[in-house]
Image (cartoon, rainbow, N blue to C red; front, side):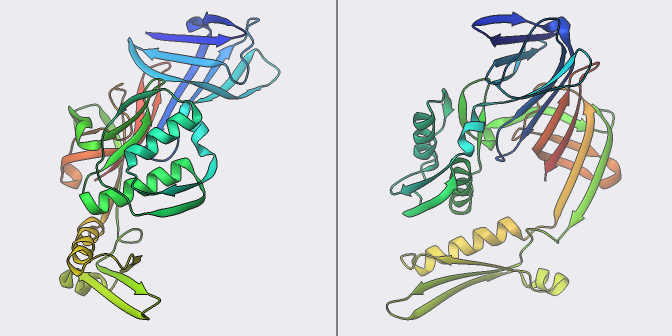
Amino acid sequence: MIEFLVSTGGKIYEINDLITKVTYQDTFNNGCSKLEFTYISKNLTIQNGSVIRFKYDNTNIFYGYVFKISRGKGTEINVTAYDQLRYCKAKDTLVLKGDTVTTITNKMCNYFKLNKGTIVDTRYVLETSVQEDKTWLDIIYGSISDTLMNQKKWYLLRDEFGSIALRETSDLKLDMILGDESYCYDYQYDKSIDNDFYNFIKLAAIDKEAKTLEVTVAQDETSVKNFGVLQYYKSIDKKYSTAQAKSMADNLLSLYNKEAETISLDCLGDTRIRAGSSFHGQIEDIKLNRRLVVKSVTHKFLPIHTMSLEVMT
């Protein structure tokens, strides 16, 4: 059921029978995935930097590198490994000129000598800017957000068993249902306007030389009446035309003028579920009957495969 290979000291070991615990965590555009496992030593020494390959039911789950080892007095040893994106937490300064999320991702892979997988063409050309003292990941995530605001297309950066991938979330839809009488055995539901909810969008184009200020506003009057003014403010480049600024404001309003629903599910495990994938959720008690995107997931593989996931609605 599990296939666990370790490359250490120039040799490859199969340690399926030594593994007593395996947990895999994956998050949506929030750093690398993580594999934590416990094994019985039996004269096998896993070192920092060792390569880990983990499969479950013949499905590729994780390929990465050991970053932490801990143990107590007994024979069990705890290991933490991360995928390639761990290296991209490094800070740097980049000049973006004529770049897209795609070109930045390729630059990152080339710089850190990372293996490339499926990297789609995001097409949208980002504003010229200097990204100073930021991690490579944060630069890419910010660029993904800018692309979403302008194109309404949502992209995901992740490692797929040792290959860096950039995918559109619409390509990660699963033909499966989670909820009542289908995998799910518990859930937690919250609905809020406390974080990342805005019904009044204000964009300001400042021309310091001409000493002018052009403001573009988009609002939902019904929402303002119900909840009060919850304002989103952003400075934009003066090169934007009035129509372009209005389009951006409308896109932001469409994106943020929604009550934030947080749904956490505890389910039987399915290896198809990763952060960024989506499925159809059905829970009668909360009138849920729509497609959901996975924000984060934790798979536990032993003694049985279960998963806990938080979704974006």
